[in-house]
Image 1 (cartoon, rainbow, N blue to C red):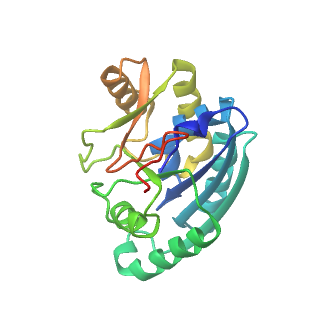
Image 2 (cartoon, rainbow, N blue to C red; image 1 turned 60 degrees about the vertical axis):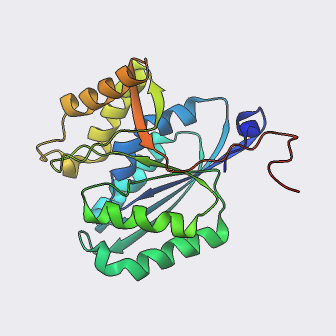
Length: 223
């Protein structure tokens, strides 16, 4: 639930960014994070990444700070087995439950339940069972699965923001440079296509299965 007054001056926006792997968050929502950091909003962000070797966790920490410069940021990293999160369903659930005990974010950024990767899909399916009254925007990640869907929400990006996103992806995640889809053309093409869909130069796209608009001063359905 995201009140319309959320973006008013002086209001702090609490963001929870969830990833199955280091680089998921930045691939799917890196431009959005950069835009939040550059906005006039007061932002608090918490990163949770479920898998990753020690080297990959170093990358994750560097990326979180780079994509959210100047933002109050906390990071929690785990080393669950990469590629095996469906078998670790209970552990993923416990991690999200523990996160929910200490945080009630205004906005959650995480993977899509329609994602072709089993780790992404597992995390996405569990999120709404824990965070039931929160705005959950599911990001998309280009890959060989061909699972890009029809999005329902967009965050327009300037050309400068997209360039910065791509620069940081290369700088923060050197371990991924050998992947056949890890290149400027892929990142730019997806962002340009999503930009066309929302009449912007570039954009990141998300799916949202449910959202609630609370109007300030209204009864909001309460008797």
